[in-house]
Image 1 (spheres, one colour):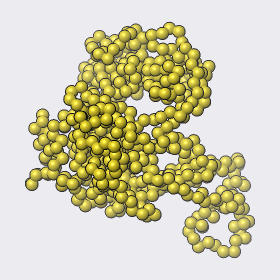
Image 2 (cartoon, helix red, strand yellow):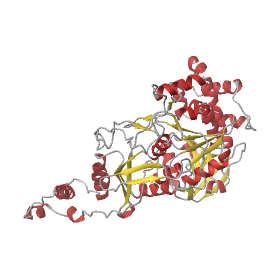
Image 3 (cartoon, helix red, strand yellow):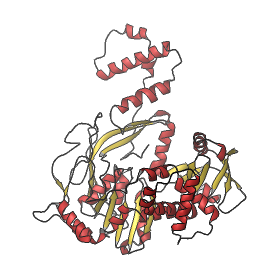
Image 4 (cartoon, helix red, strand yellow):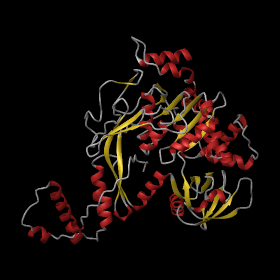
Length: 530
């Protein structure tokens, strides 16, 4: 499950229904009065039905399955898509995500039927200490030969091994003799800044945030400083596919870019007092021009940060409209190390707008003014901003269109399979490697050997993308995921167009001229830059 916004950790006593659940039909018949409270009457109905099931159902009833998996989850599903019940394992994983840690070996794996490749190992992790690195192939896992396992069995074996000591047989790239490795799981840090680098042309940095947890603000500060800090002439902050996390972390990141005391968001709820969040002192306050990339998977706390930077005219938002999640959940620990996520409030941007989209069939389906405001909202400098359904970027940049043939190749892992085969023959690949016509010819032969059709119209049209994907996967296996991601990011059309915005950032952030709407102003700026 995605990380949930957790403003604070509250404690909710578990309402014990054990007395109700053990009641028999005779007890209900003996009651002299009927409760007038609707909630109590409903609880008694549930208890009576459960009692009848327990006494008369053909097979014994598992209480945990009936109540936790059935009644509680069923009740929550009728409210909204965000409230949820967590069993022990799920609640433990949620707590790990909040801390930014997880129990495991610190490896990111590429898994296909009969094949497991190491793509990256976290520094200091059990895998890293054992010498595992990009391109290593796992041949055996706890005595099971990987090549002989079907995909489902392989996934189950890997999932079980995550929390238990394992023995591996590893084949390093360029080696003929496998190596036996013993690993014990440990707490591994999960960074939310998963990639940061500066572009070759100009002093413009790039940072990608995957989410928001307790370490995010410090990670962000460190990443920008390592890229040059105040010397940077611009920064691309990539929040695409960022599903959110802790509101406090989003406020912390906003404090790195907005002046002290700037409003970030306001939270209001039926049982929650109104709470306003403002920026607070940080070690660094960065003033370089800022372009924030967003898409349809940018949600929750990531939208909080995006809206604050937009409404204070601090950053140009580029990409595609965001998801539209403007509600706050609280995590309530329960007994038996389980937990409950409940929607408790809505958040509102500095200008007062809600970006929560309407969700038909749920408690968020209505056009209540608190959910979808239709008033006019503006940034500090008077630029109009939309409300009620995510954040519309200042500059809309569509994502790269992927045709069905490329989608098939991606889903089947063909690029990674080819990269693995190519590197088994071609050793000594360096950072200067480029995909030329010879490599493309090898890739085409590989597809034909795999009995995969190579339609001429797609082959000709997709040359640039094919080169990018092949280079990305080869860099993944030789230099690690960060290097491969940098190749992919630098070749991303949305990123390339975002870089082209920096000379026009200050103009875009100005309010529209008299008689000209903001869309017309941005369009004119884009046209003048072509």
